[in-house]
Image (cartoon, rainbow, N blue to C red; front, side, top):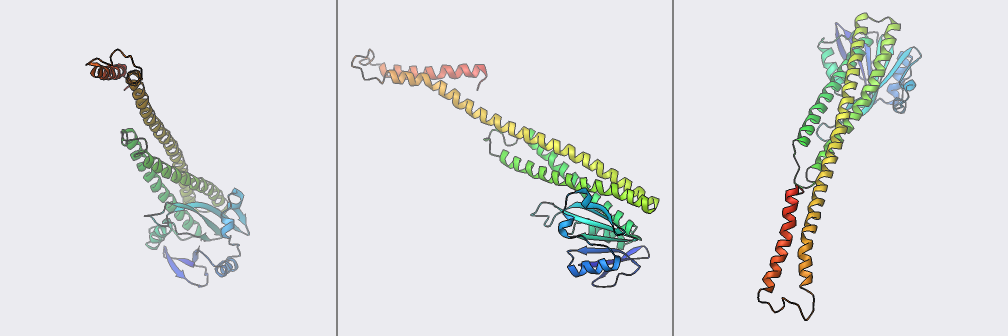
Length: 325
């Protein structure tokens, strides 16, 4: 879908369909574009619109480059197709600065885009040039990433409290801990995806700052890009901290599972040792010899039972005093 946004009186005016790209157009948004829409934009702006495969390349030289008078910048942005059932996934978004216009190429709709559009249409965001639109979009994307990092922090804190508060213990090593490991794995996966997104955004903002310096863009916009770059780096540092904490929680959970298993094995070992003397007594009096001293004794059977009970109780008392139980 091709959408053209014109800048009029400090606001963005949306035009859909195959409308001509006029001088008032500052932003051309290509969402799941067809080949005809790509050709229309390429002909109007004398640029080359990258394909989906080209946008997915991981080399920095394939994501940040200049070609034909346009500056191409690609970043991986997280979006959530279904907030209730699907985790956030990364999608590449390409920003093309061609003169005074911005072209965005994307195959998903992160929440940051409608948020920025809503603000720009209400004149709450600077959007008179393509560079200003791009800076506003980046700020909205970074704000969304910051919100996601805050949610990860909350979930990690909850996991930490649940693990070290003793929940799930004394009920078997897999009753509760298995769910905890799944939650840790989910947060770890989300953290790694956020780290990837922050890495690409860091490269993009650094490159954009150099491009704006060469183009002679407004000093205010360049200052906003520097601020956005610092925000990205601080978020990346915090994500690194969360990643380390998640790894620590995983190791702590596995250690607790190991302790639970060791406790169970210890109980079985103690019971086996405690039952060895009664087994020995029962074995002695179970032998089929004709002449056994207690065979004709009236109290022989109670005597054997008493010996078995005493021989079982004494090891148990000894283990309790040693603190092994």
